[in-house]
Length: 292
Image (tube, rainbow, N blue to C red; front, side, top):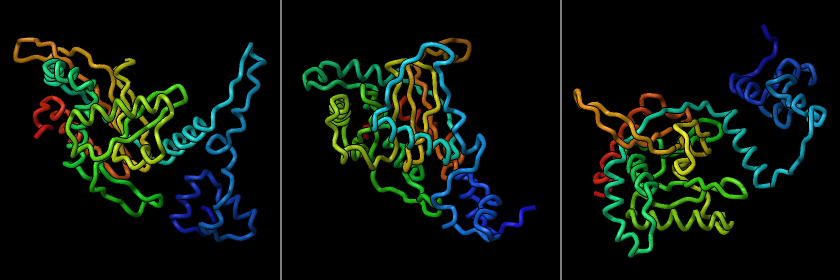
C-alpha cells in the first residue's frame, strides 16, 4: 500500500497526467503531495506518458520523405490528443430515413436555383440537430475543466467541420434554432467557401453547442468522431445508403443516412444519448416537424 498522502482529487489528477506519486514524493523528500506539486511535472516513464520510444529513424527501413506540420495542424493535433486522452467518450450509432428530405429538396430545387442557394441535406440535418438540442438541453452544455460545474446554454450554435487544404476548420452557424432553412443553407455554403480560402474570422470559429462532421460526400458507413471540447458531444454523418425495410412480408428500399454521436460520458449517459438520437432521427425522417 502506498505511504504517500494525497487527496483523491490529487490522485485523480496524477493519474490523468501519468505522474507516479511515489516517485514524485521521493524526489521532493516528503510523503504529502498537493495539487500544486503536480504542476509542470513531466509524466512518468513508460507507455502511459513517455513517447520517446516513438522517435524512430524510419530511413533505416527504407526511403522516406519529411514534411513539417503547420502551426495550425500542430494546435489541432494537440487539442484532439488531449480530448481523446482526458474525456471518457462513447459513440452511439443510428440511422435516419431521408426519403422525405430528398423529396422536399427535389420539390424546392427551382426555388433554390432562383434564390441562388444550394439547399443541401446538411441544412436540414443542422436544423434538426438544433431542434433536438432544445429538447435535450443537457447535450447543449459544457463541463468546466475541473469537472465540477455544468454550464447549460440558452442558445443553439452549430459548428460545421470543413475539410480544407490547410487542415480541418470548424466555423459556426449562430442561432440555428431561430433561422429558416434557406438562411441556414446560405450560411453553411458561405462559411465553407470562406474556410477554404482562409477567410473565416476567429469570432466565427468558437462557441458552438455541438459540431457536425459530415463525411457523406466522401464515403463510409460510420465512424467515431472525437468530441470537440468544451462541447460535450459531436455528430458524425456519413454517406446515405439504401436499406431494405420490411413492412410485414413486403420489402421496401429506403434511403438511410448513418448518424454517429460521440459524447462525454461524464455528462451524458447511454440512455439519454439513445433517446436523443431516436428523437433526432425522427426529425430527419419527418422534416415538417423542424419547420414548425
